[in-house]
Image (cartoon, protein in one colour):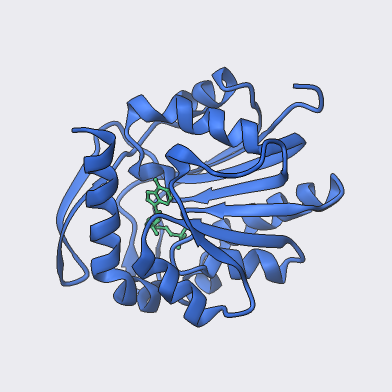
Length: 221
Ligand SMILES: C[S@@+](CC[C@H](N)C(=O)[O-])C[C@H]1O[C@@H](n2cnc3c(N)ncnc32)[C@H](O)[C@@H]1O
């Protein structure tokens, strides 16, 4: 599969169920203590380092962007899917959202104090993760922080149907140590890692453990 193929499949799939996804996940953070806790820690370290612009990459309908804005961050969203971006703009007209792929970021070097990629690097195949993380390193200012969340596992999950729509979507589940090693290889320092067991909440039952990583571009590096 070429890069264009998997990006097209991912974009078309999220476009297909963007409205349903936005509805289903609108208030999900309210019941998700772990996500809120890790995002709060991320917001604190970004603010403690002086604040500055934060990109929510793979922002989907903007629920995390909105949450981080509420925590005092100067945050904007980027996503591959125009359908998801339309949901984000409708729900959060006061925030900035733009179209783009994390595999080819068009952001100035060193301009960001933070990057969040919340359940979005899950759609990047293994062979493109090193370049994607190198792009995150490049876009972060020295001392800037990266927060990642993803499902833990060894095998990808491929869906042909989601939220009532036909899709062609691959979720790359990964071991946190392997992702941490790739972040380190990209020049980022891994500062914190949390792995939690699957939870059942708000009518949803998670199928896997969930991982959260916090990394930092070194002050000189
Ligand atoms: C599971 S959703 C998570 C959305 C949001 N972060 C949240 O937590 O609600 C994954 C999102 O990543 C986006 N995405 C997938 N691949 C991407 C890429 N290469 N660049 C930017 N966004 C991407 C999808 O369009 C989708 O909106």
